Amino acid sequence: MPECPICLSLSCLNQPGPEFLNTLNPETWLVETQQAKAYRTLCMRPVSSIHIMRTRVSFMVILICCLLSASATAQEASSTKFDAFNDLPTDDTQAHLDLFAQELRKDETLQGFVVGYRSTSTLPGWHLRKIFGYFDYLANSRGVNPGNVQVVDAGTARTTLTELWLVPGGAKNPKSSDISELIPNTRFDQLQLGDGCLPEYTIELYEAEDALQFFAAELNYDPHLKGLMVVHPSRKHIRQGLQLLSNSKKELLNLFNVEPKQLMTEFGEKSVCTTLTLWVVPPTFSKPRGTTAEKFLLTRLMAQAEKNRYTIRRLEFVGSTWTRDSALGNKRRSCRRARSLVTPGCDIV
Image 1 (cartoon, rainbow, N blue to C red):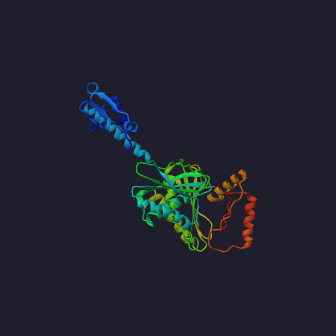
Image 2: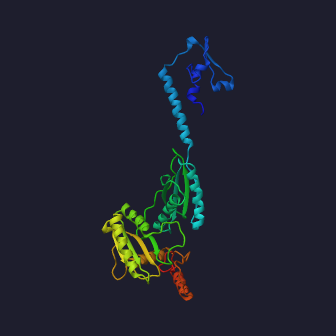
């Protein structure tokens, strides 16, 4: 521990310092500090010229030194960004999280932070299910104390990014930007359920209840927003689609305390997979006449895309089923004509 500068200066001010007892002389007061030893300089004064400090003043000086030293030690502790990665295959993501888990298990005093940024094209609900899925993996698959891990939704960025931070005791938590508020008419989340429609292997949270919980949290956070829940049943299991819509509505109202006036539901057209889609809409939104609420929202997004001249960047294939070449060609041509980044029907299922 370094010498306190206040204590070092006491000897040259004719005051007893920390090394006072080791430097007494019957004829003179001799105080040799570490600084004096370095330069071979002795501060010598006759006894009559020394003003002896009161005991309580000495204790106060020593206390100040101790507090300054403790403060310096606390300032040395700082947060460390252990790792960062973008969207990766599940096994690669696990490799990053496994190394993070090893560090947290080594030292129980460390706090781990999973800080997640999403791109503007990423569904907010899916982003939350993903980063909280990382928490679930660390706690339940890698034996990390759940109390030592925190998840931070850091809002939007240019690209999807996950940062892993190690924070020792006394250090400040990692900084992140404020969470961006959702824009109304936003597709919050989407899940595809049923045989052949679930991911083969994933560590993200992929239960309907997980999606509903994050959806409800958003509606409860801003009571001025409304939520639209749409279920598209699979062609083979229409009853299951109706059951999903009914159970999901009950969970949102009774389990997650969403106000009834904030929630709208809709039973959509048949699809290959049973699909649960969650939308965030403005408080003035109401079901339009002559069309479904979801089609109305998609039409709005199409108009916005055409106005801003967005272009197609990617086609996604979801589900395990075959598609005729002619059907695929028609879809691609319609997407090119629309010149839209968010185009209804361009996610080929």
